[in-house]
Length: 193
Image 1 (tube, rainbow, N blue to C red):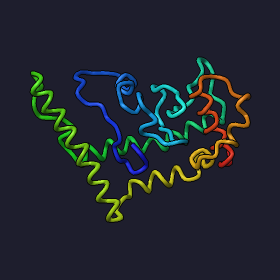
Image 2 (cartoon, rainbow, N blue to C red; image 1 turned 45 degrees about the horizontal axis):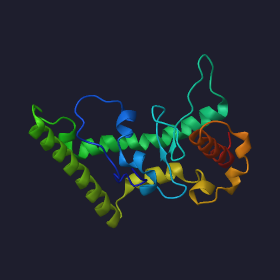
Image 3 (tube, one colour; image 1 turned 90 degrees about the vertical axis):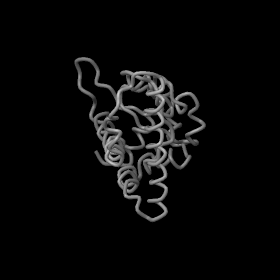
Image 4 (tube, helix red, strand yellow; image 1 turned 120 degrees about the vertical axis):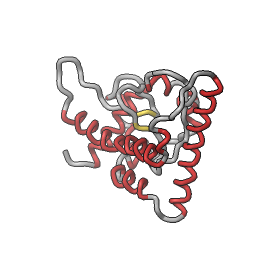
């Protein structure tokens, strides 16, 4: 979901209860992130998702210890941006009340196919509404995100990673953890603790 709350990828059709990160591993964006994200673009996610160079997650609290102040600061700002995605789900269900609870039982594959098509239609209509709202200048949902994200990671977003790459030797961990540290450092430099 980009800054304007347009849906770029989704998974439907898996009946039952499944963990978000398991479903995420079945998405096209997970399998082919380069098809959805340009250079120096990434998604924000919660701690249940993997830390990847294109998927930035909060720092986890170490067992029996507190997070350092800079890590808490990063998590706070990350959470304030991720709130937009929670608002998205609320607005989607508000716009399409049927998504709160489909009022029929799924007893066979035909019922499941019908439910999947219903959900897919709601997602497509949502994107059409976003496009129309933007054409009419009514895209307030994007304004909220842009206000919160303005200035965040400017050098990474604008394609200049040289500043962040100078300190590669300071970081340890997976490529995703290293990238998250770059983003954190840029945030800290752009804000006053």
